[in-house]
Length: 150
Length: 185
Image (tube, rainbow over all chains, first blue to last red; front, top):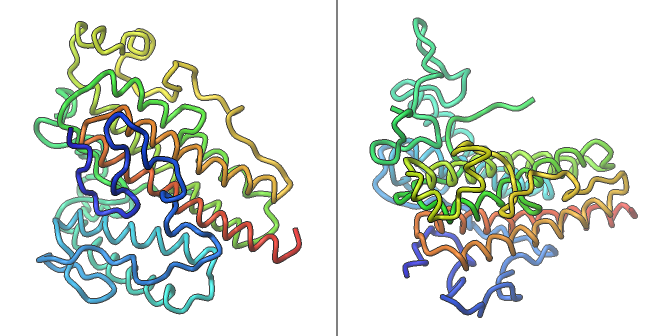
């Protein structure tokens, strides 16, 4: 069974190995979660690659489609927001946050001008309300769609 | 006020329908440790929380949990597409189907509709944050159980992402606890 499709996350290796419960639920699952610590060692960089414009806060090119680049940056944004809530004076995180937001704004504008609105306010067309156009996030193209989604 | 973004936090692309898996994973939406309870717990705890940083983490984690509700619902939606009656019965999805069809309804795997009794919210700040730390661990354990029962790599990719977020939230709530202790709560 292929249970180990890599999703790029930490703390997943060796999880749930077949029918045994070895390695699940123990202390080793909690790596990096000692809440007295401040794990801010640059672990939030999005994947590098041959993206067509998106950059992470280290200046490296983001990989994937425009939507995937936006998703990656949104994840960085959310992660930094949670971190800053409990570390509001962390200079490194603040700098990282504003670089991320700036890049996200740029990519969002590109997406909304070429693909469609990401939020209702991002409906840039003056003659049509594209906000209601599919696909919605749970609808996948082609084989993934139900009859009614088309 | 909230603003909706037309994008899942992490991709959900399930290639193969699987009604049996759907009837298990619905608990991550409406079960005792599911995402609906998580969002309701944190967002309702905010009002009497005595520190802005803790209000902030409850707001932002609660908001993220709403995004996780959407991810779990998307998994169930895609797992139950285009099913035949035979497949519904063979997959044990019939008891859900008879009430809801393939519509998304927040319930536990055993069929109990979402129940707010599975969450807690108190004016006492320490009691609420302890509840939240426990909730993140219980949700993580629930996702561990799903991973034990699922061998679908598409499903597991999304479930592993959700499981990892429980760990990060636990970390942040732990820091919130320390903030409250520093203020002698």
